[in-house]
Length: 416
Image (cartoon, rainbow, N blue to C red; front, side, top):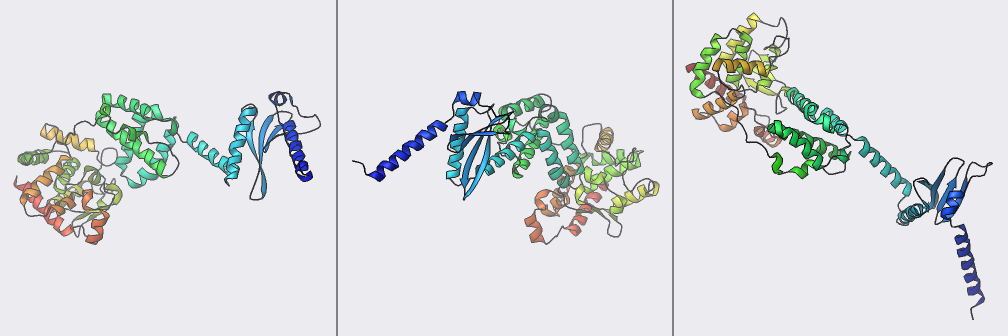
């Protein structure tokens, strides 16, 4: 026979089960329960911490739990969304979180924030944040302009309004294929821009999804086109070019083309030059970092022939209209297009202004008088200016050696 205490405990357990079963909600009860007219709300207990709240206008689910000795109440959701079975499943998930020491209220807030971020982070917003915080502070005006043009021309219409999380590799491939049909080289630049955008927002932890660009690596449908090198002025045509240059009636364009040839500067760095950048005591053009591709300030030595040409230009234009040395018709610096068209008209071919850098490198290297590293330093190639190199060189930029290089090159040009 059962002992009295065991019998009493068994009866109490049975009574508790009966009470719990009596309190259990049914689908019919959820449908028919109403709030009394004299009350704001009525809570009906379903067991395990799950409550069914009925107000005059709404029915919803709540979960009550105790964590770290403190009782808490969290909303599960509306009865319109969560059925009785759904609410019980959600309750069991929340109970498991509590048993593992996890606060369901904190987890719900985190999920809400992440969900809001994912839905609000459209491609256009991601592009704008990347442009303003990464590209503009670290790039030249020309590069920033290209970024804006690429976005407006190829990406704004198909992608701007889409949440970043909804853009997959299939969508991206379709966009890039459309570009590839008309401009293969622009496809690669556009793809690179998209990659920069995704990389930035992932680094900022605004987006935790997959970068779809990674899924398109090696895709044969948008393979990079063969590289077309800039047509450069060949050595045997330098004399011809200088004769044609001498005939040019436009002193500004004429001086610009001569200086870009003898200094091997990138056209964007030279076109933005100001008279105030010139140090007449040392014959040096001091270019601020924002006008250099490397984003580091650059001291460019000027050969004597270049100084003569600049002084002649200053006598005519001076600083009457602008501090810009090579000022265009609209008051802005001379454009790449203006210089390119003038050069190609003189030579009657597709020679590019950028090609002067190739000419400089070929001629000076063949002289055999100068170290490759110092020639490359004048070309301001990025690998000569890494942080490690700067550390070991102690800031050395070979200015004196580069001064000899550009002077020797300008003298060679004269002899042609």
